[in-house]
Length: 206
Image 1: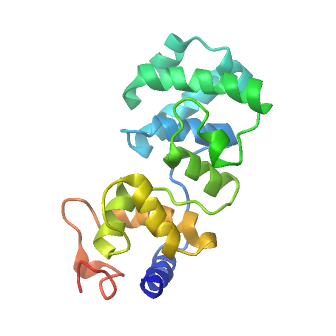
Image 2: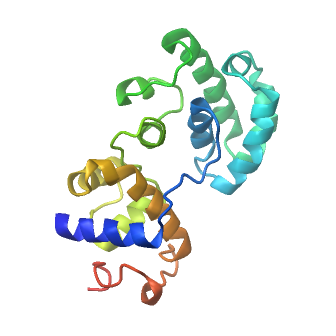
């Protein structure tokens, strides 16, 4: 399994040399909140909304002092805007009061923040702090199962299975590449297996 995983990592690195997060941000907490907004919403939509949010509230302090209903109006098109706005404002307050205005660099503290689950926490750990992190979004779960690297749809179980076979230093970039590959080739409805760089190692094709 590890040999297959390493080959998949290598092929994806060749196919997608730049493993970049598709969410746009400048500050650490901006990625935290962009990821929260991306739940049940496309990254493309989030990237259209966050410039307005962060221009209206350019600092963590200003977000902490924002009225939830005002934030709701800005992020309305991202869906679930009542909950997301509340989480953003309350997480801003907690970041200031409990963490000195710094986004935590460990899973336990990140999970204390309102609206932050393991997916969001792993994005922060991988992209901001460059620590081993497996981000199990829908693309990751779908592709990992198709490739034979994981079994099941429960995010945490897939995370554990992938963490066991993907080298720690490769994990964060690997997950970004899965998103790119899931969008470009291995879609949910109609995977283009013949055009896939992984067709010789993917369990779906073997």
